[in-house]
Image (tube, rainbow, N blue to C red):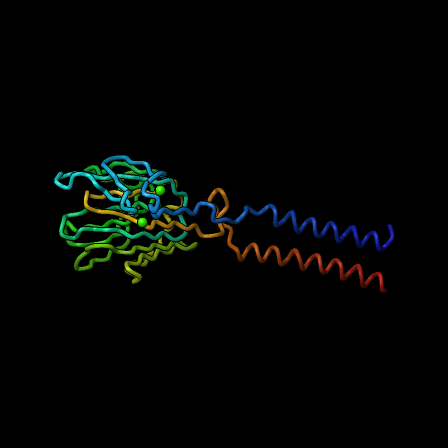
Length: 252
Ligand SMILES: [Ca+2]
Ligand SMILES: [Ca+2]
């Protein structure tokens, strides 16, 4: 085998190895991102578990009889995002006693205690204007919950913009109208299948935007981008060294 052929062969092998290495890593994507602004006047894609909903005003309203003492409204949407950004506008009538759950990460949803619609394994943001007004971030297991963050404003009333972020370290930040109110890190739960909303009948949501962070493969296993860059960089350096050695030997 002459040197030129050997060089070409090594080059092809090196590039093939590099491509194989990169190709073997699960593909990064944000394919699970979704949103709904109800601008088409319907709530197609949402599954109603209890209560009456209406989207003809281009928001999703819990529109059942407000006179009922316990008149829960429960609805869910498929959502595989466990790390990313969740944003929505919510309407709470602060002059009424309202319980309002956003189950933004949930393997499934179930009725707990007095028929509260909450995650079975996941995280929920809970708003309460019934007792002391508060917003709490809750970690739910299969049977019970831990309160992992709390903010107690003097009141909730009218439309509020809620954003939640969770980065790859598990750090949650919950902001209300652009101001950070809860910051906490928790990694007890790492998967999701459902997004749920439960409320008393005088509430609404709109502009639901759920964005998945890049860097997860289809099984929700995180591949740090730094590792990808490191492995890719090392592979490129190996190929360059091989080519240089062949070149120098040919010259020598
Ligand atoms: Ca729609
Ligand atoms: Ca809307």
